[in-house]
Image (tube, rainbow, N blue to C red; front, side):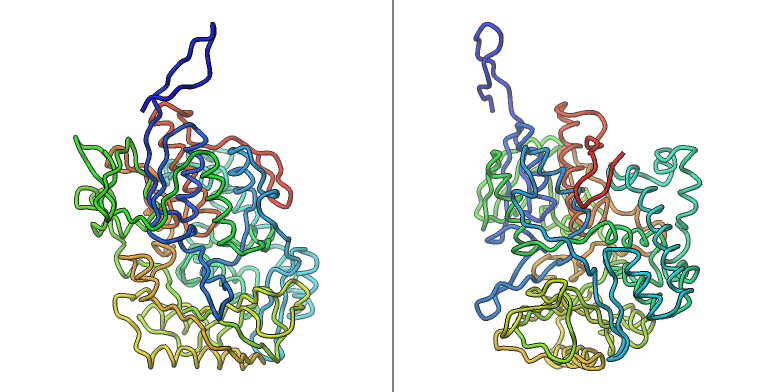
Amino acid sequence: MAVEINAGPGGRVRTERRGRVVVIGAGIAGLVAALRLAVSGLDVTLLERAASPGGKMRSVDVGGRAVEAGPTVFTMRWVFEEVFAQAGASLAERVALTPAGILARHAWSASERLDLFADIDASAAAIDAFAGIREADGYRRFCTRAAEVYRTLEDPFIRRERPSPIDLGRRVGLSGLGGLWRIQPFATLWGALGAYFRDPRLRQLFGRYATYCGSSPFEAPATLMLVAHVEQAGVWSIAGGLSGLAEAVAALAAERGAQVLYGTEARRIVVAGGRVAGVETASGERIPADAVVLNADISALAAGLFGQEARRAAEPVPPAERSLSAVTFCLAARAAGFPLAHHSVFFSGDYRAEFEAIRDGQLPPDPTVYVCAQDRADSGARREGPERLLCLVNAPARGERPLSREEIDTCETNMRDRLAACGLSLAAEPGAVTTTPAGFEALFPATGGALYGRASHGWTATFKRPGARTRLPGLYLAGGSVHPGPGVPMAAQSGRIAADCLLADLGRGPASTRPSAAAAMPGGTSMR
């Protein structure tokens, strides 16, 4: 499509052909890719089968209240600072952010509680009082190592296109190989934590970071300790929740020229002459395209849900290698007996047994429970009356077999028993919304309900995630199931990487897919 652009020398009007791109899926990766491509002058159409943007960043109605039903922790603010800045906008002006003083409140029983704070010294003092000076010293050493892991991987891995192990070694260079070895890529997270913590409760607390990637701490690599540094660098709450962040990115993409079509399902990626030629919708409309960015789980692509011609562009994730799913309960409830923070975690009595049950395809009889009290700030203060709560327990990704009513009821009973053991009781109002692995499978087909793509089990799992480019010319991948991995900021990064790869292949961007370097971001991380 030819379009007029500003007059050139001598007042002559020049024309330029704009590439036509269809982005499938308005999850955060698709939204970021659509925004980046629209800002670069491409003709962008974003298709989303739901009625609103966000994908997993969604809310549900509970008795007339919007309860966040997806991700609730916002970190790596610098990613979105850069996304908005590249589009000529300001994150702070578009989204109301409040820094968290308390990262999370943790409980093992009614008498065992520990808060982690944004301030390392405050956390060390709390750990000293909870478990002794030796554990507090271990915590400080752990923070130092987690920061080193993050610094080692941020530039060569998080910011760039998918590397192979050899590529990663080349990117860090000779000076970085020592750091790459020190991050213990071949050790498990659980095993590595033993070098810092003797108290099993603290190993359980910091081992939980593996679940941020949908993985077991007993099988995930030690490199996932970088999540601890990511949280330490800043956690924020967002007015309107993370679904509100998705809406802000969608609005900005539309302002910058992307056409966003909700209630429009992509049925097939059209292939002609050995490359992408467009997208066919469920209504039969065909949208021509020079390239397609697919923001969907790669399992859906490999299962042929976007057409038989495109399915060979991705390998399926075997059920045994899927990440965790969950059973979630979105409630309006009156809480009593425990001083909930915005983020609270109630740990099971036997962490290893919990993950062994999940590995065997069973719901754990004594689950760890995460509770997001969405009306509470650091102080724990809240308005009177029922409050909005998201309660989550980990579950196996076996969504092809729906849980029975009895199994769901048992899961809720076990959850309430764990909360009660820590002193918390909940009196729920009518209208609660429960989502099981089968429900997540319905929302995100062909995944079995897995929420994070492939589990990060073993050091090679990271390199099994596909990159943005595929074997099918013109098809690019984005989302939490591709590089650099799951989580809101990582998925957003995948959208940036996919857009930059596409632009480079069209001759519209630099050969390198690395985004421009950024200065220090308020509340974020300094980038070299």
